[in-house]
Length: 235
Image 1 (tube, rainbow, N blue to C red):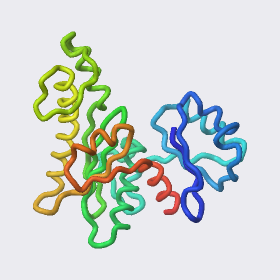
Image 2 (image 1 turned 180 degrees about the vertical axis):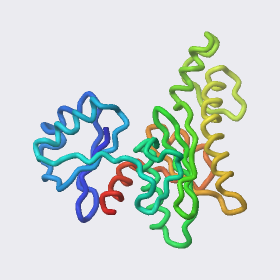
Image 3 (image 1 turned 60 degrees about the vertical axis):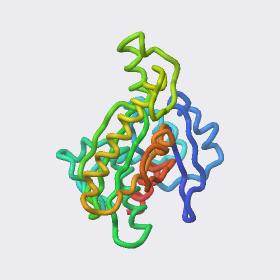
Image 4 (image 1 turned 30 degrees about the horizontal axis):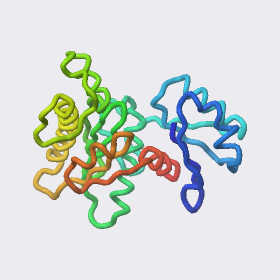
């Protein structure tokens, strides 16, 4: 779980804890924090983690507002057929990406938002702030594991990217990265049309592994979900 406390001048504190350690936040990371005025959350881990987080906030008597994707918010229009079925993490990442595009100045430009975690999601946001839709595929580790489970031939040590892989380990590693970067590249091209190269924001645990194989412009953002939650709070 990632958390952050924001004040008038930006982030006051941030941290990351394992889900099994959420119950220790009050005694450790949050022990000396000032009482927050409000709390917003993005839950992708299920009911048990929701209850744990709310229990930690009880010391301050601050209720948690869990973010649910809407049809429109903070300048982003959600074109999903059923807006509320979009992942809250994807929604808040789109909100943050739109805020970054507008903060850059000049005419708003389209962008794609890549979440590189247990799953890889690639979402398209056009120049008008409309979320056009996106794709999802297994994360890098999941794809690597699936290869190993498919045949003993692919149960190898983790390999490395190679333009022309000459062993099974590198063949698997390169294939996995090619699948992910190919999906990202295709969506960028569809969103680009006849315009300039589409900006790409990448966040998540495997962001660096993906970003080095993507065409510019690419921007790594550590806490895109937290940024989006903060934009929604201000809105």
